[in-house]
Length: 88
Figure 1 (cartoon, one colour):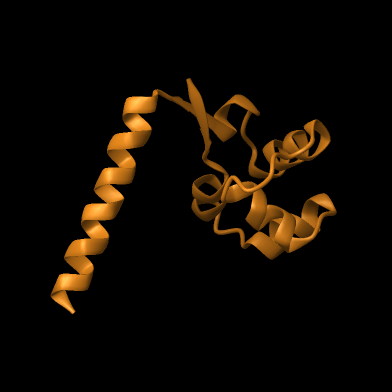
Figure 2 (tube, one colour):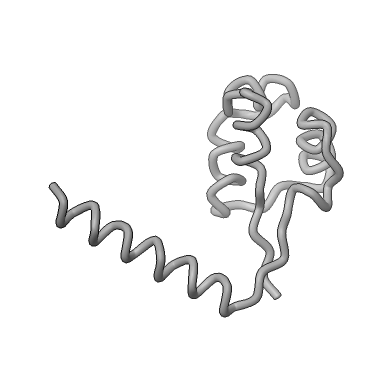
């Protein structure tokens, strides 16, 4: 299984910007961006700080997905891009 993080979604639900979250937990805004996009993995300390700030458990920050689910989502994203480009 692969894990996808829900941090951006949870942060947006709380109406908190990346900068606000970064300031609240003492990291750079770019760090939050890299974590949300999966370009870097947060340390355990950062992970717990994010969870505390967003008032969720660490488990809630991530969703387990199968390879098939990830492939399907990427295909849907690709098809949406094609549709959006075609409509322009």
